[in-house]
Length: 385
Image (cartoon, rainbow, N blue to C red):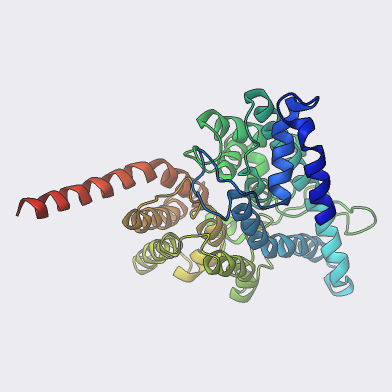
């Protein structure tokens, strides 16, 4: 690394004012600050001003996402082999590498399109390259079906980066989570590719791995089966471990829990927000279970779909979530309650977490405003006594 640092120091004058490559200074700064810890802090737009800069924060979040990503890759291969009836004769690494090859194009498209827009935007504005997409770029492929067409993914990423992030001022200024914006764009623009029974299992063999499934093959998620009035066939163990159809990174509660431990141990995510989402979801699921409004147990609502993934990795986004300490509790409860309400009361929309986080992002500034005004009123009353 010392040699690489010396090389960057040697070429720096070329990218500074007056250098022959000064027009690409933002690209140079982006690569240097990603590879090495800078000795400066962000001037604006970042939610954290600390010696541990925002790129380091984003890198830790990416590390926390890796268990969900790796398990998701394995589960893609697992679901393909299970659908073909070949699970018993297919080895672990064959399943994993099949999933790796199936998911890799989605990751590449997400990062190439997203970072390409980030680089172009920074060059156009003459600003530093912002780091927020390091996390969004990996989350987006994890919250969509593995069969999502690449051209749709590219359009969704472009829409999310431009309209949910850059026009608000970039990283730290956006009010909506970028990954949620991409998922919502796909859901409402191409619903047949985001829901239903034919989008959750990869049906093609890849580079000699996996199995070619018949045309028209279908496999519903447990939440999809519930919406159709069908009792899910998956066991609770499969739901927790993640051996069920679903979006790539959302099926394994254990893999997500590992990521949660990393985020909480490093202090990146707020335990108040995370805990409140689960409390709100459990409370609402219990109410619906007691009143007979839902055919499944309260804990199945928590372990199914994107509830855990959303609670751990997206509701806790420090930029788009509530920032006051009391507001974090209110914000988390709102998301947890709304996610279960949407699931139960809208059978045409079996997965409610995406919409719940979107509305949570929308109300986060209002929640913080109300909390601050309440504190001001309380202090004013104390000072007048």
